[in-house]
Image (cartoon, rainbow, N blue to C red):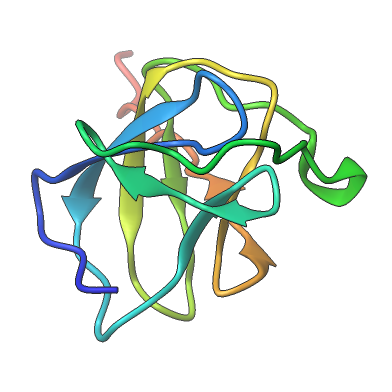
Length: 102
């Protein structure tokens, strides 16, 4: 799927919503709970459940990245499903350390 910066996506299996902060290098499959996400405002497929492999949860205000594709996502609504890109689990982005103030 074509993912653009600023686009908003929602999970097909739970309440998770994300905003794309940095787009991927190419087309990717953006997933949550083990199933493809849908653009905010579109109808989600029914009858899907969260995969146990992708049930770690997504937090609001946290950034998630996938090193292989370069995508960066911001959690805008929390949910029990965890994010993945092309089947790879997205990782929580570490905060930049602040300079020492001696």
